[in-house]
Every structure is written in structure tokens, then in C-alpha cells.
Image (spheres, rainbow, N blue to C red):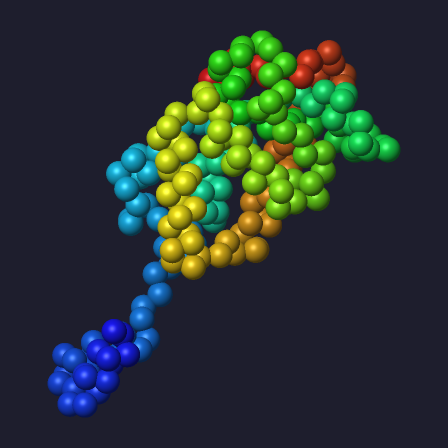
Length: 214
């Protein structure tokens, strides 16, 4: 249909049709879509969820991150709180991570609210270095948990599903540099979240301290 429209206009273009022809051949690039920003074309529910995430305080995702990362990633990481990694997280490693004493894991905030003071490991994830945080399997695991977790609001699940669908429909691919920059910043926040030994950090368990997130 686009080709037929171009051929028809090209036969005898007027001034207005010339502009239309130019727009058909060289469509304008929407920078918002290029940067995986979909609020202007998303449903009301998705816009409201994104707006709520921008208004609520989060531990690992800052307002300054919003312009440089995708809406999907912003909403996804907004669903997680800090938690102490248990010793079992070291079972597959030969050496202890450099930041073990100050490192935080990622804990589904909805699971944390439903199981206060418990070791509800089903909603906990423990990337122990930047490499594992950048591994493509981690966001897939986080998304899988959020989408199947019984405690996550349906509106949040719908939002993540729609944002992923919009990215696919518009052929949007996350910019590597923006993704890398965000994950590097995220790792710094996670790796240095808890006080170092001798500064009040001893004896803190794996259980998340929800009082710090209010």
C-alpha cells in the first residue's frame, strides 16, 4: 500500500503531495520510540504505572535513570528491594566476591511485603558481580518472577507485557551503551548498599529491612 501511494503521488505531485511523498520515503524518526519510551502511545494503565514508579522512592532505580533507560527496565527494577545474600549464594563460587560484606541482592518488594521478616528466597536474586548482573538471563528471570508472582498487582504485569509488545511492534532494540551505563550504576548501588564491617554492618541477616525503604 505504501509503494502504491508513492507511485500515485510521484506521477503528478503538487506542493502538498510533494511533502507527503517525502514523508513516505523518509519517515520521521520518533526519538521517544528509539529510546524505548512509550508513554505517548501506551494505554492509560501503562502510563499510570510508569508515572507511579517515577513518583515513588526506589532503592536501586533513581529518577535520573529514567531518561536514559527503557520504560520496561525502569518499571522492572522498580519492583525490587535490597536484601542480604545468604551464604548459600556462594555455593557455586570458589572465592568470595570482593564486595560480599556490603553487597545487596534483589528482592521482589511484593514478596517482601507478603512475607515480612521471612527468608522467602523464591523472590530473591543474587548477582554477585557486574558480569552476572549484565548476563541476559537475569532480566529474564526477574521478569518471569514478576509476571508469575501472586503478589504483584495485575496492573504492573500488564504494563511490562505491553511495554515489551510495543518494543517488538516498533522494532526497538535497547541501546547497548545506555543499558551498560545503567547496569554499571546499578552494580555500584548494589555492591555498596550495606555498611562495611566495623561501621554497623555486622550481623545483618538475609532478611530485608523494610523500614529502610519507606
